[in-house]
Each structure stands twice: as C-alpha cells, then as structure tokens.
Length: 319
Picture 1: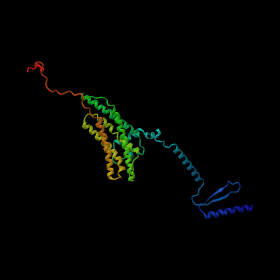
Picture 2: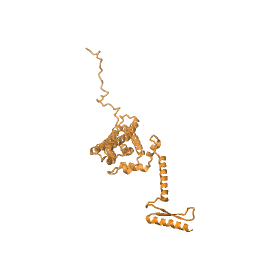
Picture 3: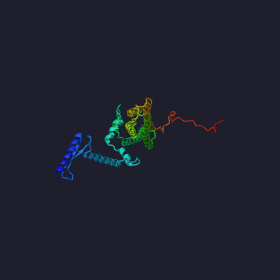
Picture 4: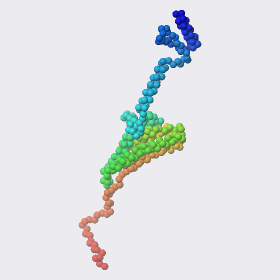
C-alpha cells in the first residue's frame, strides 16, 4: 500500500514540475481507465492546442465541402445545345422587364444601364419580344400608311405587302444580334491592347441593344400621322433617346481607351442607329406612285350644233 502511495506521489510531482515549466499546458483527468485509481495526464504544447472541438469542426467543414461539391455537380450548367441552357436567360419577371424598359426610355448621364438595371443578370426575354414587336409594328404601320394614302388619293393603287413582315424581322433581328457581336468582339480585342479596357459580356451587350430599340415602337406608331416634318421630328427624338442610352452605357468601358478610338467607336454606334431609323422611314413608309392618273384636258370641246365640213380622201381630191 505504501508503494502505491509513493508511485502516486511521484506521478503528481512529475506533473507539478511539467506545469511549472510550461504554464500554458492543459491538464485532463482520465478516469476511464480500468484501474480504480485516477491518473493525471499533462498535455504539453503551445497556446494553440488541438482538442476534440477542433476535430469536430474540421470534420464538419469537410462534410460541408463535400455537400457543396455535390450540389455544384448536380447544378452543373448544361451544354449550349440544350433547352435548359437558354431557359436561364428567360428567367425574369414582369417588374424587372418594365424597370429595364423605363431605364432605356429615360437615360441619364452617369447612370449606367448595365450596372443599375441588369446587375449581372442579363436576359433575352425583353430583347426578343421587343424586336418581334418592332418588326410586326413596322410591317403593319407601313401597310396602314399606304391604305390611308389611297383613301386620300384614289389614283394610288394599293395591294397588301406581306413581304414587309419578313424584311422587318430579318433587319431588326440581324441588327440586334450582329452589331452587338461586332461591338463585343472589338472591345475584347481592345482589352488585349489596353488592359484597363474591360468590356461587357456578349449577353449584356445584346441586352443593352435590345432594350434600346423599345423607343422605336411608339415612334413607328406616330409615323402614321401624314405630316412629313412631324414624322422626321419624332424619328429624331426617338433616335436621340436610344443613342444617348447606348453612349451613356458604353462610355465607362471606352473612356480608358485613347480618345480617338473612343470617339470613333461611339460615333459608329450612333451612325448605325441613325441608319436603322432612316432605313425604316424610307422603306416602310414610302408612298406608292400614282398608277391611274386622268390625262389633262388639251383643248375645249367644240359645240355640237356647228356643222363640220366633210373631208374627202386624198385619192378623191381634185388635182
């Protein structure tokens, strides 16, 4: 019994010495041993000891990382040839579309359309239906203009021109996709030349151009007013609003480039927009030439009671 007490006292003395040498050490009592007597264990180390709580935290972190990785694999973006790939671009509600339309109609300096309205969530729903509506309205109003012109002037011959729907659709959709593609490619190329030039994504560029065309829809309807100077005035106002929205949106991207390149790029954007509006005005709202015009009166008709002298044939005339 005395030997056991001496052994216990010896272990306690060793533990006391270790604690004196390392004040930051932690002591744990292990009473789960098969022996009846408790022993004192000393954990020697620095202040950052790895206990059971750290191990539990590490295991929970690993489990969370594995779960997140599995979710990412399940939510992996599908290929561009699948329908679900394009479904995300049409995931937008009505309030967002109306807010973006309002932003395109009221451009303000220093108010970037991409940063304030798109917010890294470009959509194709708005641009698609805006282009479709503009093409349909162009074709319908172009035919209505000719119908109204025929009522004012019966000499104009009118027949329905259904080919204008095709021409309008091809023109609007090609402009809304090809011009942003060329602009995006040019800005990507300039980013390689000038590292500080950061272009928008291709979908953001298409979205900006699509919403910028909305102002032309009411302009086309107002072109039904048969007053040429008023039609050109409405066209200039719509062109100014639409081009201003494009310039205010592109300026933060091109301002880091040279002045010559920035001025040439913005001028080209405005010029192409002006060519679109002018082409729509001249092609869809041209007047048909008169087809049946009454010939002018050359001379006054003679009275019917004046007898006319008979004329003899030249072969019977006296020589």
